[in-house]
Image (cartoon, rainbow, N blue to C red; front, top):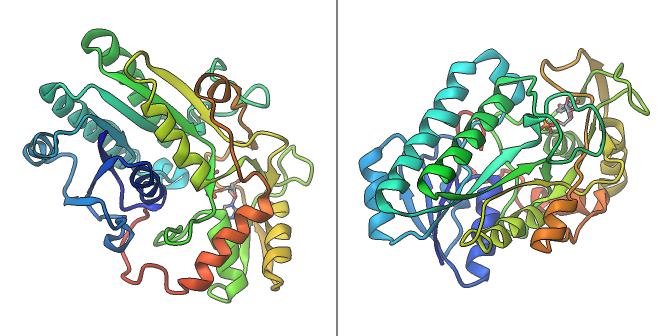
Length: 332
Ligand code: UDP
């Protein structure tokens, strides 16, 4: 299949592109590089340097490469920033996303896999979270992901634009060549590893007064390759139907302190911590039920052990101590 990957120069996008190529698909990465890295564009993929709001370039790209499906990952994805700057999130995650859908409609390219988020659920009533649970986002990031999901539903109904919306929990880890590098970094695992390698003095724990087993937030960490495989499997159903799927490993999840302890074990380094105030918009616990995607798509995560996930990220960081080199504003 000929697949356009928006945001394919970012962390998850690069691994999705790797998996597409591994499976014999043609991948065209469409990325503005405002957060992504040119070096993260996987060899073997075509690259178009462009913005989703550039309707002409987008239409031209869909046509020239005879795109049959789109994996749409280009987005802003920081909970804290979204609370401070909702306008940026509505513009980049909703308005730009709709521009993409309109270009797809014009071309008759009717299949899309969308990077959605656990943030669509807000503060959940129960754990693990199922797709049928209420969606009440507690921050603009989750709100914009949900708004786009709603648009997909109605575009499907009216225009037969088939979609799979994948609600990511916490993507982590690395492959041999693709790893996580944001500037500035805000995600827990890379921050913890930066402290281990000596690139930052300590890890700040955002709140230890949550109603959880050790007072810190619980999250469901999923290896980026397992996450990427789900996109490829989702492409396979879109001839027939659309769907919304959670993507996490489930179980009890891990607290922030458990992640730090696991990283100490993996790296055998000292990781100093400090506790500070809660980060606005953070729910206490986010753990997925991924039963639906297992049942309907036959997806099965291969790397469920947190230590293994952290080890893959650590290996990448040791091989790429300066990341992808060039510094960028924002995050990938
Ligand atoms: N977190 C933290 N210190 C940090 C970064 C993150 O305590 O320096 C916490 C954050 O509050 C959340 C969890 O780690 O509870 C995971 O945060 P991350 O930003 O990695 O992912 P998110 O859950 O926001 O998508």
